[in-house]
Image 1 (cartoon, rainbow, N blue to C red):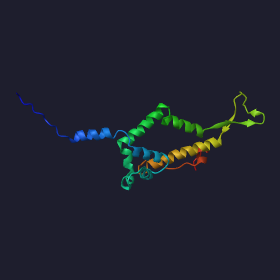
Image 2: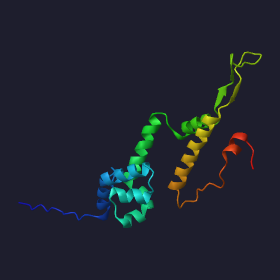
Image 3: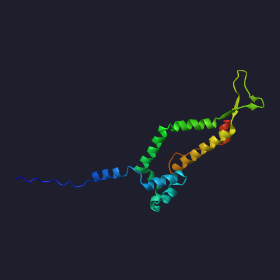
Length: 168
């Protein structure tokens, strides 16, 4: 009777790497908590501490967003928002509409119309100011996300400069 030899394979670093990648695809509960705290306005460091990470990990918060589970979670959120039609272009168009908002000119007898019967409109300053505030909040969030990165805003524009179209 012939003996069959069974070859025992030693685990390789490649197999270990594959196991780690598969295990890290979903975000951990701690990562989800940290992302929730970040969305509430905390800095990355504060969010990591609140979620239960050590001070050592929190001090290297920029590495948190490089983790596969976190990246997958964020990309799934982006995909979901895009499926609803909320992409960067659409949001930029909506903010532009806020900033360029107009309202009809109304007198005691109703809306004022020109010779052709079109309603005359004037800038809606309240809505424009709210649009600029919204844009300012978005820029502030971008600054916070890019703390140490080179994408910085060169100069802030005053509300009066934007609405009036004049540089000072």
